[in-house]
Length: 76
Image (tube, rainbow, N blue to C red):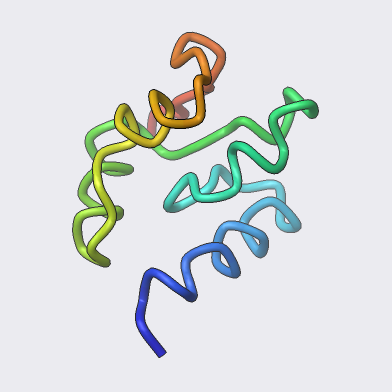
């Protein structure tokens, strides 16, 4: 299976384990639950996304009309 297909499953596992999302693919799905807007640090997040063929998180948020200020980037 393509890695970008599996990314939401990793993000779902992260949420279930109270960890920040690895790829941020479920931000739009969980947008109404602020505690689920946690993602890894911005540079790491973009590197993770790039490694599986996804664009930067800023493009994702722009397309979904989501405010980047409402995303919680968790520092290591």
